Structure formats: structure tokens, C-alpha cells
Amino acid sequence: MTDLMEAVTSLAKRRGIAFQSAEIYGGLRSSWDYGPLGVELRRNIRNAWWRATVQLRDDIVGVEAAIVTSPRVWQASGHLETFHDPLVECTNCHQRFRQDDLEANADGVVLCPNCGGAEFTEPKQFNLMLKTFLGPIEDDDAVAYLRPETAQGMFVNFPAVQTVSRKKLPFGIAQIGKSFRNEITPGNFIFRTREFEQMEMEFFVEPGTDDEWFEYWVDQRLQWYLDLGVSKDKLRLRSHDPEELAHYAKAATDVEYEFPFGWQELEGIANRTDFDLDAHQSASGEDLTYFDQEKDARYLPYVVEPAVGVDRALLAFLLDAYRVEEAPTAKGGTDKRTVLGLHRDLAPIKVAVLPLSRNEKLVPEARRVHDVVKPEWISQYDDAGAIGRRYRRQDEVGTPFCVTVDFESLDDHEVTVRERDTMQQDRVPIDNLVSYLRDRL
Ligand code: ATP
Image: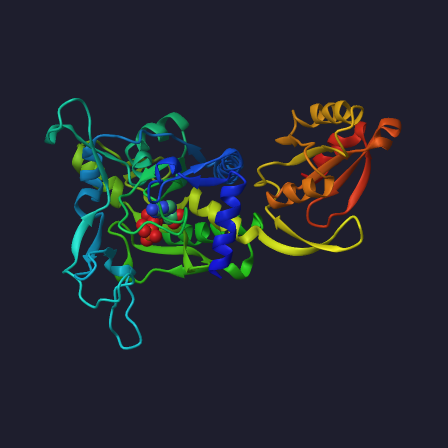
């Protein structure tokens, strides 16, 4: 199964989805840069999430908070005190691990995954926040942190956003943005990195209704992946045991995906209670309560939070969409084709326009067709190489439709539209092309 991981990583590199950051300098462990197609794919993932979470609802609004904010936020939220992972070091090879990542073998002994040694140092609590200094003097007063989650931006802005949006409970505040964690063991391509992007939503509810809303959001979030075409049998829900819960949570359920390296958290849904609002209210001295007009009462809302990483979701979408299958060639034989069966909303390129060849009459006609499609969808014009190879190139990055301009097109003003999954071809008048594609995209 690691072959799948290798195949997808190599495809991602070859086709400009993601590659190692600063590769010319040998790269930096766990840092990845996204190329032209990766940028579009990420934008589509964000848009799909934002549309489902904010735009199609009238009870959720957005914010974009600063990445570097007052350190008092992290003091109050408990991150300075408790956002730790237990770090152990193998006494033989000196490699460091997260203690909770190490598994005992059949004899109940934990062996170093690197050298097989059986002795480790005592676990040291290692704070995951990335520290920096603001201004020219690097002293204690200048210490600041890169946020380890976007959520605190919603809590500290809760009264302001509630006032300006005039929302009544239950309502949510959503945010998409970068977070940073000094992970002890980053790895598995973009699965765990030190810099990543999160899509988080804090849903504020009346205490006592939180359990119900928690279930609601678990269902909604699982459905989001299914709606975007992720295989049902690769997804499952896993509730956290009480001892596993984060310092702020009363309950948590993960949406897990079966990655080639095992079932892993794709998204976490947590019932954060009033932990954060209460902590910020005490630390800041500001009133963060909500006035419930119907009940004529003031209280601190409870919070249900779905949180997922853009990068981790992207990896799951890529792995799930990747397939290699037999396909007929133009000459009647068979061939292998690699297809990214991405949902149309996620596909980085929606339409490719291809002249049958670089013929001097076909090229300008195909360019004209491309001009018709371009304002509507992210599209690509490609006239380099044999037509069969160009189809394969588009299949490999998940382009749902290829539009081919051939010699007949010059007379009948029709083009051939080929669908990615079925490879079925339809002849469509250029005048109807946009409406044809609109019905299908
Ligand atoms: P883990 O136990 O895997 O370290 P977590 O439970 O601490 O993760 P959360 O704090 O619940 O993670 O973060 C919410 C989501 O953000 C995760 O489900 C994941 O999709 C994403 N995420 C968290 N940490 C990372 C990371 N280091 N790299 C990429 N994505 C991450």
C-alpha cells in the first residue's frame, strides 16, 4: 500500500501539485511548496468548505484573524501550559520520537523504529508552539508565538463578531488560515507538517444543547467528504476516550481516513464547552457572555468545533481519487491510464481545449474555443504532442472534460467533448459548448 503513497507523491511532484520546499538546497524536512495545480486544488478545497460552512448557511459568518497575536491569548487558552507532546529520545541512536507514536511489539516491548534499540530517555513535555520575537530586542517581553490553531481568533472576537453580525445563538464563526506546530515527528508527505492550513468553525450554542449540536456537526462533516466523492469504506468515525481528550474538550470524534499508512485523523470535531470563552473572560476581565433575549438571561455559550487541515484533506482527496486502469488506444490496443477521479468541484483544471494537431487552421480555431471557455472555468489550452498523450495528461490531473477541435470543426463548428471517467465522446456545437459544460460541471 505504500506504493500508492509513492505513486501519489510522485504524481504530485511531476505535475506541480506539491514538491519539497527549497529542493535546490536539499529541502527542509516537512516543508512543502504547492505548484500551479496544487494552488488550484487547495483553492477548490477551501471554496468547497467555505461554501458548505458559510455561504450556503445563514447561521455562520467568517473572520480572518492575525497569525501572530497577543501572547496573553495563549496564556489564557492553556496552550502555553498544556499544548505539549511527550518527547523521548532513543539512547542508542539519539533519534527523537513522540512517545505516543511508539507502539509495543508482540512481546510488549517498545523498540526504536530507527535502530531497534529498546532504551529511551524519560519523556520530556515539549511545547508545540513556534516561538518568535517581535521587534529588534530578543528578550522575554518581545516573545510571541505563531498560532497553533485558528480557533482562538474566533473566541477572542466572539463579542465583536456577534454584535456586528447581529446573530442569535446558535451561530458559528469560521476561519481558514495557516497554523504552526513544532511537531516532533512530521512526515508522510503533507499529512503532518510544521506549517499547515486549517479550516475551523466554532459553533456557539446554548449550554445543554451542545450534545445535540455535537452529533449534528459530526454527521455534517462526514457527509461533506461523501458529497465530495470520498469512498465511504475509507472513512469512519472514532470517538475519543476520556483520557485522550484535549485539555479543553468534553467530547471529541475524529473523522478518520484509511491512509496507506493506516487509519488516521482527517478531521476532529470537539465539544469545547465554554472552556475558551471562560478562560478569556477571566484573563482579560472583559465580559464575553451572550445576552439571550428570549430567556432574558446572560451566559457563556458552549462551543462545538469541526477542524480540518487543508493539506491533510488534499492528501486524502488525492489518494482516494488515484487509480490506474486499462484503457483502449486509438489503434485498437489497450494501454494503462492514470486517472485522478477528483470530484468536479475539486478538479484543478475543469476543461482542456486541444486542437487535434498543430495545424495552422486548427490552432486559431482551438484558441477561439478556449476564449469561449476561459471566462467560465479554469481551463488549459494544450497543443503539444499526440492527442492520446494529451488526454492522458489531463486524466492524470483529473480534468473532467477535454474539448477537441478537429478538421470537421472548421466546417460544422462542432467540437468533440470527452468525459474523463467514461471516456465517452459527444459532438457539441461550439455555440452550445458553455451550456453543455455548465450542465455537467
Ligand atoms: P494530531 O493528534 O494528529 O497531532 P490533533 O488532534 O492535535 O492532531 P487538531 O488540533 O484536532 O489535531 O487539528 C485539527 C486538524 O488540523 C487535524 O484533524 C488535521 O486535519 C489538521 N492538522 C493538525 N495538525 C496538523 C499538522 N501538523 N499537519 C497537517 N495538518 C494538521
